Length: 409
Image (cartoon, rainbow, N blue to C red; front, side, top):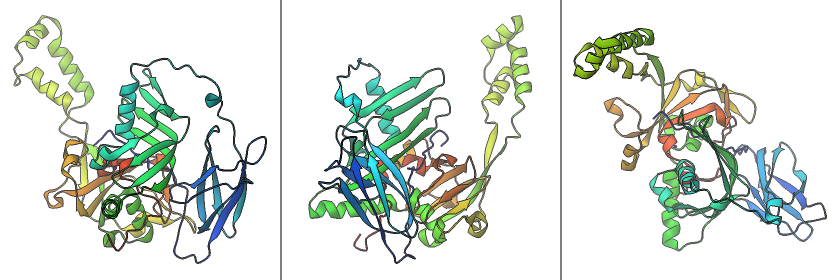
């Protein structure tokens, strides 16, 4: 998915492993304050698993491995509902009570906002992305979005009063996405979003389906999900990944701020300063100190020694593994090259010549540790900031958590 863009990975609390031969189910009933609700849509977040409630409001989601799941419930006239369920050694049953969506039951007067088209365009860029797949990806109901632009804090937050419905004609998915958080910091240029998606295959001709299979394989390969799944299984090298470390070190050629500011003040003050401002030509003292101020305070130092996965990854429990590190992870994916349009995104990471145009991403850990599941789902999503290729790929390039590359692709 350069400094500036942080992509929280979508919040999936789910776990699958081929080590388990048992399968379980999540059953339940969906009601409102009056009684059972037939026809409510029930989804399993991150998957293509869905059902509807019967005439008694009952539902079943079956053939599930032990793990942590989020179920989503949607019905017209009611607020979206989500519940986290842990399956360990038995099936689970839940009772769900939906609340009326009062904003849909009464007339709402919305004042025209001349900035709304701008906010929608900004949201699409940061949420859907700007990859070639994003050109074929459409949010069908932008009317559910509300925007809060806090000029003082320099923060744009976005909320949705219903599931976002996204049609991805590039990968052949219809996605219903329960947006939980979206923030864009104008000052740091960091983007964070989290939510719960459910996937449904679009219908198409055999040629379209074949093309979707090919594009899905490309989208998955080298992705954040692919990386963490390979990291969990200790198959990084076989899957085409290599990890180095990258650290920010002081720029010793840059003078301290106190020295730079003192000299600029000295050279621009009084009558002599006025003359300096008129006559400076790029080679005089004032130009030197202005160039000093424009230099970065830190430089990135890349250590090309491959990281030992046994020292990086530890087992947290039977479901989760974890990482705790200081310097950034410089992740190289060698099975695919960066596409030409990426070069115009300002996200390309510096690299030694031998790395050519391999897909390169940097992962910084803000709040250690970070834990992750066997299917590539990350638990502490706000702990990570992604730069480079993973900051480029967003919702338009995401596949379900149970995605498996077909041998036909």
